[in-house]
Amino acid sequence: MAKETGKKLIAQNKKARHEYTILDTYECGLVLTGTEVKSLREGRANLVDGYAYVQAREVWIDNVFIPEYTQGTWTNHSARRKRKLLLHRMEIHKIESKTKETGHTLVPLSLYFKDGRVKLELALAVGKKLHDKRQTLREKQDRRETDRAVAAVRRRQQG
Image (cartoon, rainbow, N blue to C red; front, side, top):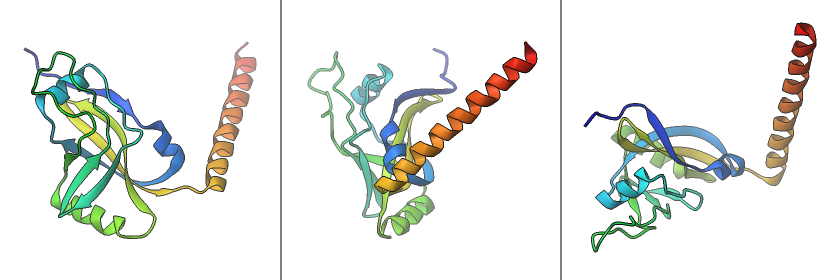
């Protein structure tokens, strides 16, 4: 069997980028069981309610929904169990010191396969206030309008 290469997205947490200001991102592996990997290969997962934390110099992710494997037997996993994340010791130390500061949290952004292995993009983030969310939406809308205007000018020049 040929070895997988490239990046294949499984799940994405779009709500996180709206709710939080992303300060730093980390790519980490996950400790999973066989039925969890098979369920992920079917493209089924949900990161919306997930959160991560540091406990005893280990990083854990909790409340990430990976549904039970349909052909699984008694060896199936529980859908919302806590899972250990695999990071370098220095990264864990950096994350631990940052999360002790008030307002900083760890949020999962995306879950994907990279060269056949499951990876999680974890973000160190700060929650946005309501006025920050409105400002972000306003900037996004302004960007769209300028892109449309530039595209219209280009079409007129070509035509």
